[in-house]
Picture 1 (cartoon, rainbow, N blue to C red):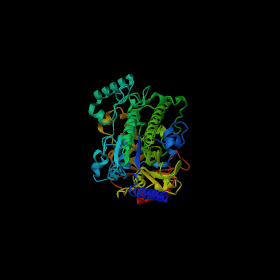
Picture 2 (cartoon, rainbow, N blue to C red):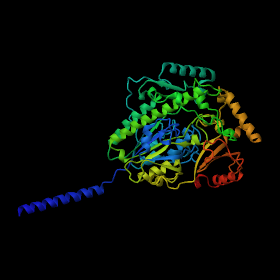
Picture 3 (cartoon, rainbow, N blue to C red):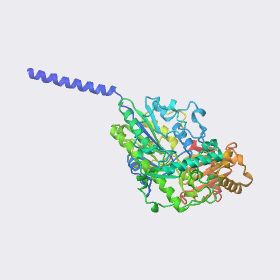
Length: 549
């Protein structure tokens, strides 16, 4: 009898403990998902997961297998500052009046909420490493709750000067800077980013010698520190600067490629009947100390440049692999949303151009991957051909994390595509860029000092080309300061409408249309031969624009 009574007591005790455990589980809310937000500078869609047979990007490729890869994702302006301000605020460049590198979204729209700010205000720890926002516009006070760890550098790692490790390159940088300052003055050189060393460097050094390798170490240290607090979710922005010019990377990443086997661009001329104002003269690449200032690039030089870009791409890929492995080691991988994006693409000789800052496909199309390993609703290892935009990232993250979406957002949540990548989606994606041929690579009009520098002959060439095409419409002030190119990518066509921003209701100054079904490389503008198609595209752009996408 006593034994039966004891058994009954034991059963009741186990039942009580079980009920209490369930009650505690009910009362303890599940920790919100963390966010690892990976930004890459100037990375085009030339990666293994996007079909490249040349570029080695195993870590990004592996990430793509963990989530959804978007094959047709577009930035809102193909230059660092405006693109980053746009994605981080969820608003388009003209909405926040950021269309060059020297405009501050916070000064223009003080009350606007950024992605990390939204997470911070909803209980997240937020921090960044490297280049997430552009330049000095990091929004420290509003967006970030803490600083990164910034671990001590290895004292055995060589010191860089001007971004270079090798003594000869450091000297060339110093000599070039001194010569330019002596000729043009320090103010001109600093404001116009004219002081550079050589365009490439391959040095047999550890990854953390260059800044992106150190950013990976800082990201890992910061991630581990935040992940140690199991009760507080976190948002970590990690921004890598390569493959932005100049192309410097440890030698082992150069050794991954045989330069002689690197293919060159097959389309080496500007589009037939394309807008003369639509392409510059590769000035951002030419500014390096060892680059020709006005002459064409030889095939050997082109292979060297592509080699440098690819080496930097593989270098960044390796750093991303380290950070994601650290995330796995922290135990937070399953509960983390991972977003990987580039601020814009980059022409490597296509259209005869080396740079970003255009309204064409290569510069505006970007790598874009979203993964959430622990979310069974988010598809793994599939791609979506839906037309999406970087401005869509903000509302998507809000929905994935269960946060309210700010009312100002101008993008669309991609959650339906994450659950069903083949779902029918928006009909258009939109980008802008102000008269690229008449802007410095900071996207500002040519300043008088810039016109007196070594690019003067190229600027004359550019202006003569535009004058010939535009005839009586040509006016330097108008085309430099007020002409904006509005690009729309539909399933079949890319349309670019060039307008005077002061007179938005007037007829366009010029129109370009490229048929991606027949001409995926955008070699010929078909607008002149298709007036009805032009009319149709203009109706969509002018009457609806992105709001009717």
